[in-house]
Amino acid sequence: MAVFQYRAADHSGKVIEGMIEAEAEHGVVSRLHEMGFIPLKIAAPGESRGRAVPVSLVLFSRKKVSQQELLHFTQELSTLLAAGLPLDRSLSALANLVEGKEFGAIMRRLLEGVRAGKSFSAALAEHPEVFPRLYVNMVRAGEAGGILENVLRHLADYLERSLSLREELKSALTYPFLLAAVAGLSLVVLFIYVIPKFSLIFKDVNQALPWMSRLLIDFSDGLSSYGWIALLLAFVAVIGGAFYIRSPEGRLEWDRLRLRLWVLGDLFTKLEVARFSRTLAALLKGGVPLLDALGTVQGVVGNRLLARAIAQVQNKVREGKGMVGPLSESGFFPSLALQMIAVGEETGRLEGMLANVADHYDQEVKRITKRLTSLLEPALILGMGLVVGTVVISMLMAIFSINDLPF
Image (cartoon, rainbow, N blue to C red):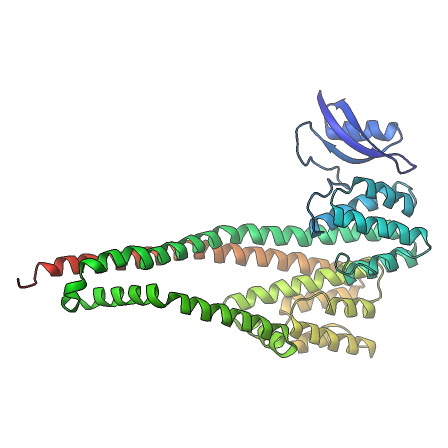
């Protein structure tokens, strides 16, 4: 038998905490249900975050409202609503659990708005920095259909899958990024501090050095003397590029360039197709009409060219045409995705097929990312080895050349 910590809410919305002895987590859940409580979190003693019961999670310690916090909020709100608590009591219970000041203040404003007679979706819409259009539109559809708890469950699934993909991509890219940063820093130290020490030795015989050694020493001297100018120019170029990309024309060109990049263009395309498919599937599952869902998706996808293509698809659908033809004309969607969407339209299972498309291309993105990172790591190590080897050989050639000098 193990002792578990728990956090639960009663049917009035009051939050309680305590400890229960049981063989496993499901035993704790059963005991809490028998006592008339709604489980919110179950964890073994000493766990800092705990393992959440399937539909509820630990809450919030950071200052900013992250996607992880939004996921936790959605899952726990769905749990409380499914257990029969009214919306205002559910929000009140969750407000007592929030530790972050920013999200806590937002929770209190949501509760005040709902108690003042606003719809939940209208209260959410007042905080677009936390609740995106996708979230608000799905909640609005859930309120209209009387299935808010089901919609929140679909939203939680959507957020969890999106967050999982993002975290996997971050994890896959962390090591290559650190390796590249260390390699770059090592090269800077090598050219600014190490090589100049050698150049002092050869200062009086510079013209007699082999061409490779002279070239390396001159490059090092230039980097030491004018490196700050290159750094300043690079900084100005980055700032200027950032401002240009923020403009409508610049963002369009940047999005077009990303899709045309060698190797990475295919990755970006599949990532956008997966995001489009999952977002549209989540909206349709939440009861949002197709035309409204397409309008919402335009604001969710990150690529402006794809957003324009979706706007054209929306116009065609409004005219009574299917999605496959306009999507095919856009040139963004792979043939497999188009075939799966066509099957979904023909069988009346469009949302299910869109979810399958998203799952497939999520896996493709993970596979491509894993392959690229597996190639990038040895490439960085090899490149670093070549640079260091070139420096060593150049210095050795310079040292050996001294013996050939006439005295």
